[in-house]
Amino acid sequence: MAFPYMEAVVGFMILVYFFETYLDLRQRAALKLPILPKTLVGVISQEKFEKSRAYSLDKSHFNFVHEFVTILLDSAILFYGILPWFWKKSGSFVVLAGFNEENEILHTLAFLAGVMIWSQITDLPFSLYSTFVIEARHGFNKQTIWLFFRDLFKGICLAILLGPPIVSAIILIVQKGGPYLAIYLWAFMFVLSLVMMTLYPVLIAPLFNKFTPLPEGELREKIEKLASSLKFPLKKLFVVDGSTRSSHSNAYMYGFFKNKRIVLYDTLIQQCKDDEEIVAVIAHELGHWKLNHTMYSFIAVQILTFLQFGGYTLVRNSTDLFRSFGFDTQPVLIGLIIFQHTVIPLQHLVSFGLNLVSRSFEFQADAFAKKLGYGSALRGGLVKLQEENLSSMNTDPWYSAYHYSHPPLVERLAAIDESDKKAD
Image 1 (cartoon, rainbow, N blue to C red):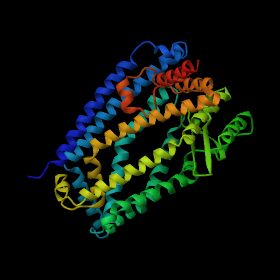
Image 2 (tube, one colour; image 1 turned 135 degrees about the horizontal axis):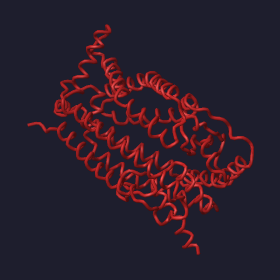
Image 3 (cartoon, rainbow, N blue to C red; image 1 turned 180 degrees about the vertical axis):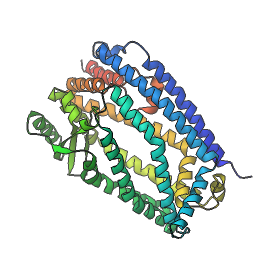
């Protein structure tokens, strides 16, 4: 008797849903606490705390509904054989369009087109509610309905433009890969990731946001001086118009080798009136670069990608696996989808491990900025970002450990203060 792979996958998905719902309930209890954590008393205003609680609880309510609908749809799609049914229907559409159903690339593209339409239909109500109700209610949403749908249209166009050649290449590699399939797949995805990391900030991101050079002035001089002191090869320093869509703020850097760029959200500049706080945030980001965190993360992703493809090559010819999910044939894309579902337990463990590493990196980057003399400014910058973004002030430790790639503010401030005590 064949192993019931599909039933096992659906069962584990439901178990994960119940576990994550339990964590959500723990977090809700933490969010309902009427008092600030001791570390934040006198640091965060009561007004900001109350706004943060309201915002976090609204997002929590929304998340409960969204996750419930998602698990219902995903489980039904697998359990009732909608996936193989839709695969057959997409083949019929290929024939109807006058093409050969046996052409796996065309069949797969037709299937993905249908999946994209379905995803837009099911996700759109949640995206609209999140943006124009929750975010707007708490003063974050700045985009119009026109801008929302324009961005959505641009995203769909990019998927139509970039998706077919990438999917076609993957199918051809799997069909022709032979015993070195895992290596070829990994090599292709490695090159693709480099190309996308190069093209995205230059060609794709400007389609959605406007990037302008940071004006000459004290802030620019301080950032350039900091970068120079660390031998960071800063080539360009941009401000992005994040305020056209949201009042949330951030900063990030990107680029390869000697061509690095730093991007500041205009909202960050507006919210942090003290230039030193902004420079401290940049010092934290440069700490990730100086301590090779970015390189380590990239290497980890490449190793995990290779291992995933290695696992896929071991099961891609398993007739029992495909039949368990209702398929009589073994299409490449379907094999990848099924494999991703069967390794869900490992994916959750790996995600948890990566979060632990990421949190450790954040503490190290904070310590790096503090060592450069930005301890007080970093503290102020982190508090300002927490206040302006209305981030959760009270967090459940289990929820935080499972979901957060960044430590909560309380833990980061405690670590900064602890280093001060040790210095004393």
